[in-house]
Length: 245
Image (cartoon, rainbow, N blue to C red; front, side, top):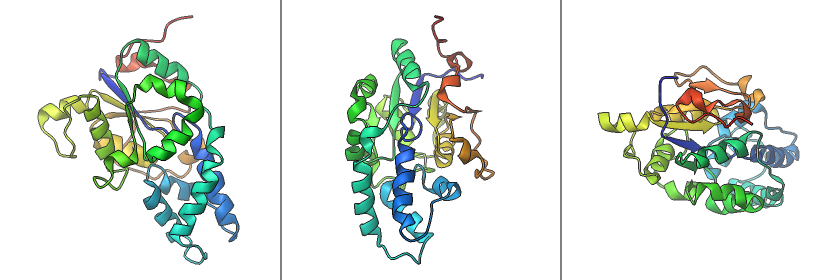
């Protein structure tokens, strides 16, 4: 890679922690009562979207089922809350974050989760999320400014939290473009990849293998695709290599 990375922005759900499993389980528990199922081509359309937008889109695909959006939101939240304590870090995540912190690489989380959900998801992982030193951007922080990914706003906002002069609109100055080019986004969602590229940053895509089967051609192509963060090589991006054991 010919870019030298100065800061790193991480998605959270399905990238750092295995919460996408919970979303799938809960959605299918609810849909299953009506003989429906959320397939991966449907799930791909929801990942990275804020909660209400995601629910609205999901239910629009099943117009015959007898449940309102409000009913769905209440039931799904109750079921999800009961499961958040089971989530775990995904492979390679702990090592990478500790490594970046050790070498003083600025890092931040940019998630479509509401902050109340982030608190619940991270309750058993507080020591890990402490590495981010409070640099956690949630949907609440950008409410009213974006409808969610693939809009790049949340990534630009996150870079701004780190003190990077990147602007907040897709159109930018030459100086802002240079600063954007120093950022690296980690994402598992197709819309997240699109948002990262539209933000002018490099993107490492770490999708569930089932997502690969339903991904549609897009002009926004990730700079690197990995099956696991375990396989990430920092030195390819001008970052310090992992310490040899």
